[in-house]
Length: 514
Ligand code: AMP
Image (cartoon, rainbow, N blue to C red; front, side):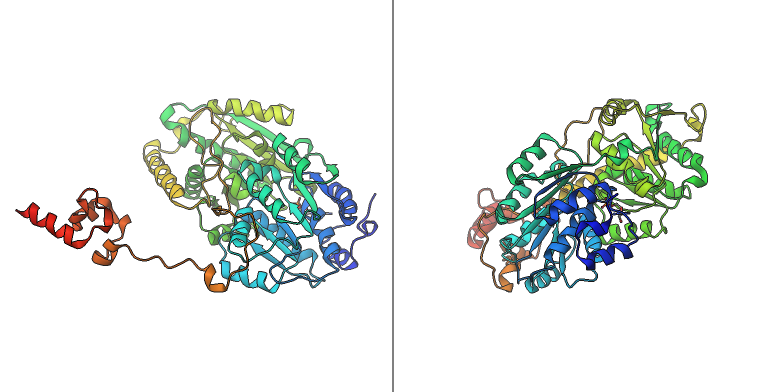
């Protein structure tokens, strides 16, 4: 069996690896590290949980050991689909590079540009970024990608789901043709295949078995659920969820509950808390600081149940999650693989239990087709349906009806930060939804030439001249059209817009008065 020592890694990296407690390389590491160290392109077909992060970080640190970072010109680039995943890669980098002098910067939304700019200005060896944020920095002239020698694309299939492929293609185009590319994806959709054919040069292909589909260490099951009455469905489903958690008893040391919709993440977390469970929500509409706090709490074992959306929990690496509950059958079958892969990591045992409503049955077929296995049907732990034990539908249902509307409009009013794939319609057969990226607002317009770095000041948003009506009345346009109409009646004069000269308004007012 291959040992880390056989892999030609820098002794400083080997020291860090042994301090991390790893004894032998995982298959993706044993397969990817040697060609990566030879400078070859690598196409790794592997999902999280297989040790793929170290499979690119370790050779990267070894290769970058020689050479020096230059201001604004990172020497390597790791692109991740979500902030959480990028932060995790950065953590991995810190662990494995701790005996080296290599530097890194993490470019993700929710962190101030200034801090990130300062690091980039000094020069970093490794830049870990989400695509949107990276392009933001590039367009602000703060970053040159012409010094990138190694580029990693992590979780490319997720990038595809999130609509990041055009950004990735563009970033490829901004880096030197001679760069080395390490490309990872859990699946090889045709679009991913096209990208790899275009941008990778004679890659070494390493495919490792999907832990989730082949892993016998994850016990899977699905409960077919039908509500006693349509209007009681939501409450009864949450009742069933609690029964499933309770039925696992002490075996359930911690759990991630996945919901398809952000609004359900909130409702389920709130409901669990109300019933005395230690649960916290995590989804893209929450502030980054809160997401980080919740994840840290979950990792540290302070939060027992994490109620999550797919995007927020993407790539989440908590080595010992005992249970995954799927509150809904995911509408993208691959998400099932990703979700249940949160448990049973590093050879541990895990349990993945799913609830399937009648409207989810088609999605269940898709999942079973993908994993090429029938998921065992489980009995409802409550015995025969017990709608009476369900939550009072009237009160909760009312709360639930209100929340979605609020949360929908909130997510729309935000930037592109988080109107994500999980914001799916509530209809029975989910249609392809506009897949919007989790992490970053996309910059537009885009310029293909690397702009000259601009002086610090130019990067700040230009001060916007207050509009005339604001100067006059101090009113902001978003304070309500009706109110604004009342308060600045003169603006109702059709055809003059908001720049109507005062003298004209005066004549209208006079005529009106007359
Ligand atoms: P990843 O697939 O990169 O998300 O890694 C999954 C988990 O495996 C992480 O918790 C890593 O710390 C751990 N890991 C990575 N490489 C090894 C190894 N060679 N031996 C044991 N655990 C590892």
